[in-house]
Image 1: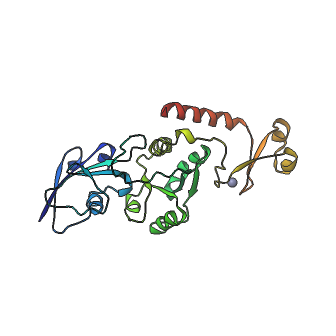
Image 2: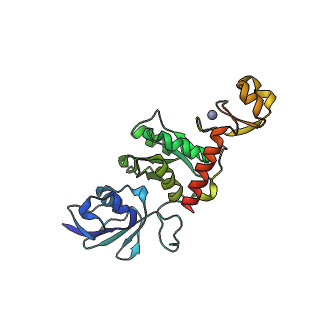
Length: 248
Ligand SMILES: [Zn+2]
């Protein structure tokens, strides 16, 4: 019998069964196992984990646990400097791209409004969605922790809140996106890019009042939806500035 001691830190505790939260607890194993499988047996997907210390030394997910190991598991802190140890999540320099699970439609629209590149995985479910995320190099956002357990998923995030407003804050915070918010650059419907267009080129698409009162327009390069600074624009601007001040 292999006996190990585990302690999870910070928001990883939200994911644990109650008796395991914020305490060191013992696990008895019949067979040697990787630390990844051990952590996921506690219902914490590996995508939530950025640092594992075993008896004080950092290890990767493939580490085989040994009798009497004391294992500390830390979440992803984008802004925390823990250089010099094995951070387990990649930090690509290029822009982040996301794919969302079916129940996250509202989150999808709001992230697009903020200029984030988000594909909505409406037509995919379960492992199909996992494959789609892996093959497209997109970060999987989901409320289903089982989808974040397969090893082939390298980056993902388990959305905690039920409420779209809070979900947006979670994602911006987790991926440190405050500096890369570009409002009104993407189509909320389809994730296409919004391009400035001449009014005369889209006149046939406008209602009479819009035609009369607005001069500047943008059009989605993918679905053709036309956007202008109508009454909803002010509401959205207020939403965005509130969001940014909440985060800052
Ligand atoms: Zn579009």
